[in-house]
Length: 69
Image (tube, rainbow, N blue to C red):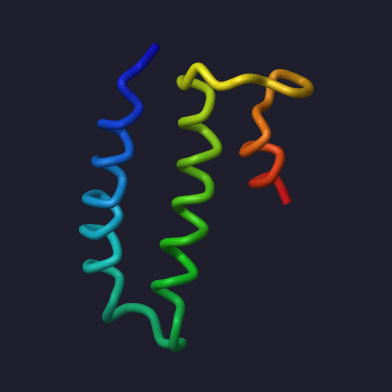
């Protein structure tokens, strides 16, 4: 099992750097927030593969099924 908690710490730090770089490039209000939430959802979907959570169907966890749509 990976130390997914370290990944959970690293993602916001990396996301902060990327969003800080992008903040003057985006024009629509709320775009940074949408990018962060979408990025976190994608990150969380993939980090679930290295955690030891119970899978429910097709080797995916409940959270992954929630994040798919």
